[in-house]
Length: 489
Picture 1: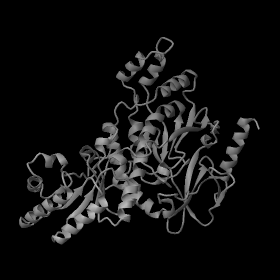
Picture 2: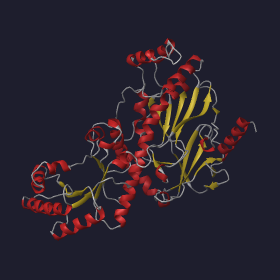
Picture 3: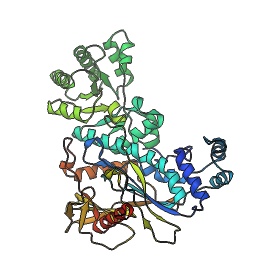
Picture 4: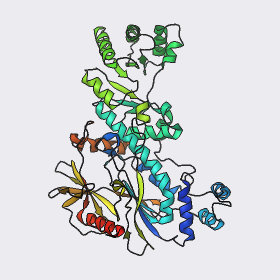
């Protein structure tokens, strides 16, 4: 395991959209530097037409908040930015304000690796509205992609039925940072290892890899290449069979495996990277078993994803492990989670009560939930989740035995007799980490346990049943009242 799972972002303050800075300047100039806001991160639809998402990226939130500073180079750059109408974009007084800027926000988040569902807050940020606004883009950048990758990985791992899956996505990822995010999130989502050596160093993820087709092509024959690799890496010997012809590759691998046995060594596995993987894996298994080599494992790759793996097992393919690259790293066929960061309450100072606010929008599905929100996850006697209630965290009053569906106000759920757990945890207090983040191994274990407890009807790939998420009755009434007031009804 790596010495530390802590990463220090660079240029955090400028890792933002320009309008965050123009709004911050507007708040500052309007005398609202002390005004408070509450923002929530959520998504509106489950990714991949699935039944859940895996919360990821939360373990790096404290690092983000603590490192969000404007150094002299950043200030100098902002001073050089010109407004479209002429002159500097930012006033000198605001730049002086940024020079001494540091965060004082409080942040609550779903524990990394736990399951989350549409429209409930994954992260809640409270504090000076300027600070909350400056945190928005970087925070979304952190949790959106990693949540998407962790969810994709969990689906692939579920399809693999307990067989190890390795992340092979670095070369297809969106840049250096994207490759690291994929390795980290896919490990939390259930992958056993990664090909990304830097991710192994930084995060302590087991690394995996042997040789490519170029190794075989560099020798005068495939057999010579196999022999050379077995000699070079006898303790990490997995031979790639499909550079030329898989059937000849099987024969050559058996020859090398027998030679390794004579030296007291063992061929660990073979890998197939093209062709009909179900048919070829069956032929390979039969050949190695007939040769007295039942211990040699079969690994496959080649644009795999959850549906392909599910199909391979449905065809009885005797595959032991999977290398999943492009479609994991790019989250095919959904490139974005679509998580948003919306204001739900304001107050003039930290000494005043919160004023709930909501966005109506021309599109009904974009209407937000007002107030200081938290999540109660209701569980049965076995600890399996049965529904999530979004409650008003600013008030301990109100019925918590029933809830109104978050999308359909005509549907309600009874939750009598179930236990409930508060889901959001305080991770940053007054701009400083409230506790050390969980390691990715702890997050990985949490994800595995959460998925094990989730009803299979929510995990199936085709038409999964919708997991119940609803509003506390009082919060639902508040939402309807605010909507009527804004619409003038």
